[in-house]
Image (cartoon, rainbow, N blue to C red):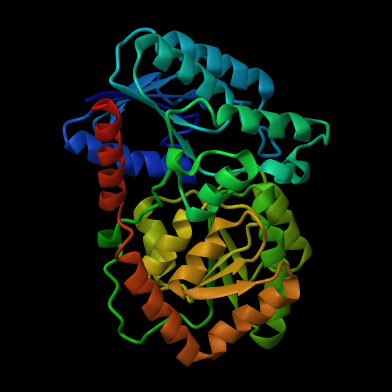
Length: 385
């Protein structure tokens, strides 16, 4: 089968959707798929064309270095440039199916135009549904109603919608009136072989870790302020922050202003091996984000045998994950509650071991092999109609 995949970000960009597509598509290539992926060229040293794990990756000829703004949003001008580029590039070859990332809306329209022109199915993978959350995140409130209208419109474009979690599925149905039979849930996965955790009863009793993009909605500043409170009870508390993003300098400045130089390490972007080692030697994984479709890093924390703390707020799919697995604590969006939960998991070994065991058991059912197989079954169903 020959498929085209349209997604704004891909390796070496580090983000949830980029990671998901990389893990799924390389497994589909192993099954005999021919995969062409169309994405944005963000840096000069990124190649216009290369093959990554059998995936033919095509990037925009022009470097769209301002595509992701300093606030973590998207440049409307560059999104339209990418959209028109996708429309042109998809005309060069004939595909059996087109798969498109729902974000940032407009490339999905290009994908739909080409899918209808060639008479092939279009699958849209939805990582989030913002709806009223548009009012929280857009730089100007006037954009929010436009965003909501676009969401209501573009759910009609794909032949089938993949939701990355039950939460996203429910929001598609309840907020955007998508028919339930149009949506299939294919959750995220983890490469459990990369972790190989043995429960030897030895855990890092002072290490807290955050892994992810350093964007405003990740609320790493909340975690930094919580660590300052924790330090009163546990002076040698350590926080490792792994990842990069537009808010890195801001979060570093917050840590400095809080006097946390001796307690916090910003690692920036690290390779998979180093990420796994940092995670496996940590006591607690904290995700203070207020917006997640599901959260790959939460699953990875389970695979590493590390209990998690997440924030309970509407639109945070990580909460559903932690509640379903029983692998961590869900707290209100409060810096003090965040600090109290960290101290609790450091001091309460009995609770810690239960959460750790639950996570290790749960994550066995969430492998990337299983995710890729679900995509394969869906694609085969669509092209055989």
